[in-house]
Amino acid sequence: MTDQALELKAGLYQTKIEDIHSAQSKVSVLFCDELGEFKPVVAVNAINLPNYKVGWYRLANQQTAFVMLIGDIEKVTVVSTKHAIALISGDINRDNAGAGLQAKAFR
Image (cartoon, rainbow, N blue to C red; front, side, top):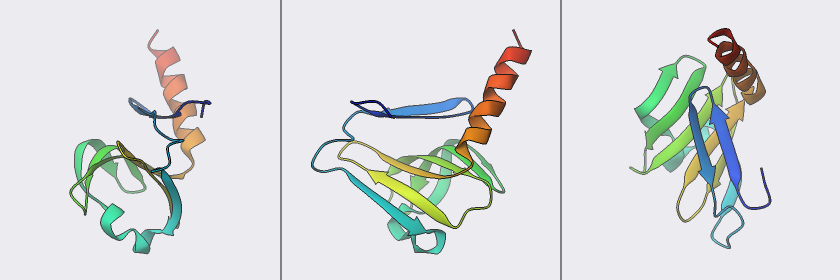
């Protein structure tokens, strides 16, 4: 997180939410079974494995969101702004550490 934006990165997928400080921004923590309209339904450009959902998903409300759900999770942080939605939960540092190791291995 910077003063101006929320930057999210998982493996090959990343996004930057610029309007995080706007009055229309909302951050909520929900149980997985209470996601309702924010439930990821279809992987649009994403990896969709058990305990690993990363990338862009179509939600139950038909909007597209950046999703980082890594590991066995109970709660999800939902970041919703005028221009973007992100769902974040799990061991996100584990994923980024692995991506760094993979990048070094291919140099």
